[in-house]
Image (cartoon, rainbow, N blue to C red; front, side):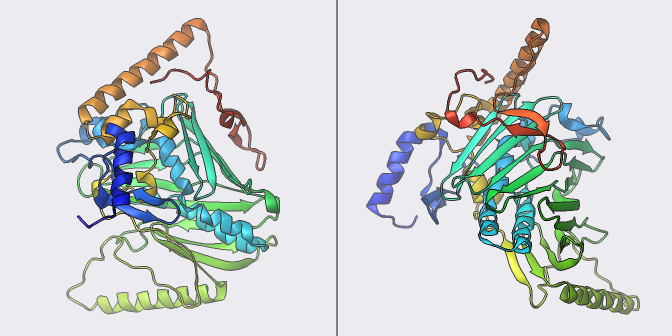
Length: 453
């Protein structure tokens, strides 16, 4: 191990005392963070191998069914709640701040579109399933360095609906939504169809943008290497100006040529195409003028046809590997967003990003202010993170039984479940059914929260 200063040793010692068994502090996995100095880039224990477990034995009777009611073994999970997974939308918050600084609405749309793509980037290679939140479960995250605070709540169990509300610490933006993915098993893949509207508000410019996420699909569930793709059309709308960004998340295709690729364009209020976007949702997004983009696509198509024609006379044709193509940057393009590198040990840590590694952190300062419904306090997630798969399985089963018993007791007494921090109502910008923040959470009065753990 590299030499470190006495002050760093002292810092680690203090952290060990504070975290006790909740965190394994390893100096080899500390890295310098831009604002906070030191950031953990390791979980307490590496992930378990799933090689000895067959998901087919569970899913073979569920082809074409909606999977939210199917109980899955904990071995297929990752040690985060879906509420925490939603929080990963905020990793690239700097794009929102960047949008706020521009006085041009098209420039703002470019940043918002890049943010919409970046919000799903953390799902790359994340084949573990997040824990289903319990009804009433919450999660909060305050990041002074990124300039936001977020609160989320599981507002419905059947169907499962997660609501979230994030706001800039300088009151410079509001980002909110309610997500209820429809999961279906199709024999070789599991598809998560997104439901629910995502909204970004920029008060400085009196603007609101809405969109829905693309469909996410995990392939090779039964046999082979698991891999993920996102596909479908995403339309980002500026409700004040009428400008739109139309994005197409490309399906993989026969030889994987389009895997991870995203292409799109921005329309002004008169529906004129003003520029094009392209990139990979796993890596980066670029912007380029429309004429240059269309010329490039024509040349690319011609080159592909010429290549195909020449290969017809060849005896040995190689099969392209899925995702093997690197992104070709079109001359004159401007980079909008690039993903941050993952920790070197990410593959052993559920393929988490650095941002995801820190979501379950629990110190005395945080524990003193969060409600007892916070995801950090879930014993099954904590046990899995600490490497105790048997305890995680036992606790998951206990919590699910407790939730079922509570629901049964409510039905006997005609009591209705009441959400604490969100209420159901129309989205103020497009009228769609949504879950909206009731503004009471940050008052820190949690005396009436339920005992769900």
